[in-house]
Image (cartoon, rainbow, N blue to C red; front, side, top):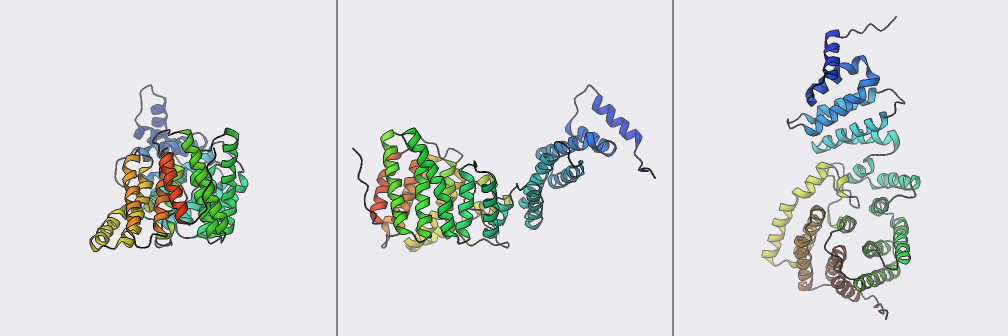
Length: 395
């Protein structure tokens, strides 16, 4: 028996005439026409409907309108016939918009389910980041591990993400070994060009931490000394300016993970080691909204003269400032925070941990902003405080 589904032929005719007309349609009219025609000519109009729904969702200013538009886009994309040229890309776009809106509304379980669907499509999407936000670090690490295996030419971001999750899962030896490959790539670039890239400095500092976490303190100290040598070579090259590097900011924020509450499905935390654009909207806003609470806590510690607690809270605030400010030309606003961190650390009775940390933090910020001579002075002092033998400067 044939298909007996009935269509409103007048509506179909009006939609065709509307699209064929010479006048410019507004998006609402175009969307309405595609909704009608997608029912009678799905092969031709479902892809157009998905695009119009997504564009309408991006542009709408009507409260609450985005989510149903994105849900409709997902439904339309799923209905595109299997094997159609752009089906996968359209479905990926629709699922991505839908899950981000779900997370923005705090509907994490639904958002995670959408991420799982996207990951099942072709292994892409934000599932690893969402798992990390909920403290499921081994699962996130396994996804990153598979992605690295599939893409040997992947950029540094992939290694940052993988090693962050390996470390969070307690797989410190594997994290150190994986990050060593990125450091080796930086060394090769330095050898080829005759001068080290700035990111090699903070990658060496981060690798030193990973080596120490893996129970290899002597190698960590040697790596830190190598970082000092790299900064000395950068200082010889000159001062290029004041940009703030996103790679530096990502590793700096990652360095503060142990001072934050542990992540769980009930209380998600940022996926440290991941560029901020990949954080779920609810997690990003919670990280931002925590700032006034930390500022009030810092004020209480300052009033009580509790310098150790004040230093710890100040560093958490500095990490947030770096995360939210690195891409907005705020290097001049960040510098006083690092200066204050060093000043606080010098006032502590026991400076054995805090002062090397504060000096290293400021040194890497200075490298990221092109102030290499000042960075070298800070890192040299930090290295001496940690008891690492000094580097003999080349003539």
